[in-house]
Structures are given as C-alpha cells and as structure tokens.
Length: 124
Image (cartoon, rainbow, N blue to C red; front, side, top):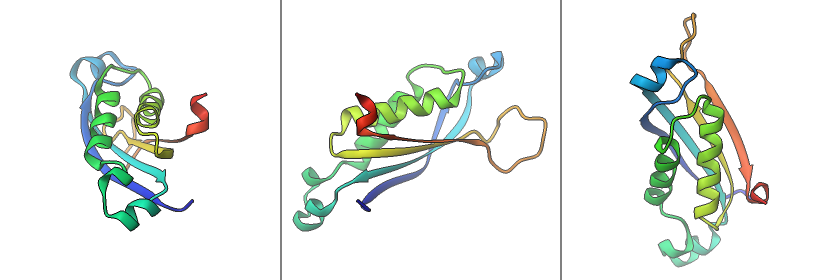
C-alpha cells in the first residue's frame, strides 16, 4: 500500500528526559506522524468516514505524548504509535519521529531525535 496521511511538526511541550530538570521544567518537542492507510474509499466517496480525521489523530498523539512523563523519547514515541493504532482501526502502520531540539548534548547540532515504525500486527 502506498497511501499515507502525514502530520509534520506537531509542536508540544512535555516533561520527558533523563535529567531532573527536564522533568521539572519540560521542553518543546516536535512530532512527525506518517500513517499508512488505504485511502481508495475516501478518494471515491469524498467522505471523512472513509478515512481518519487529522484533528483526531493529532489529539490522540498529543494525549499519548503529554499524558505522562517518560525518561526516554523512544518510550514516548512507542506510546504515541500504540495509541494511534489502538484508536484508528483503518491505520495499518505508523511512523513516529520525535525531534528534541533542546536535548542536553554538549555539542552544536541541528536536530536530534528518534523514529520508530509500528504495524497493526505489532499490537498482538
């Protein structure tokens, strides 16, 4: 399947990190979501019931990401992927990228983060 829905640059403030101050002060993160979904029905019908709502996907991702603090953004990304797959049965797989632009690294960098991909079959 080659059909995809994407949300890029979902900006969220959360309290993830290994260091104590990250859990206390929090920081900004940016999420990119790419959902594999069959869009042929929506392309024919022009009805939202044949796809998934971007707004609802973004809210689901926000709730999962901000719902609790994680030490690792890998765990936060997994929570987002699992939540989206659980809530939206039409989504066959999801790729979640979390950008942590203020990571506590003693270096100058443009971006740091993680990307993970989960398939519906991974939920079993």
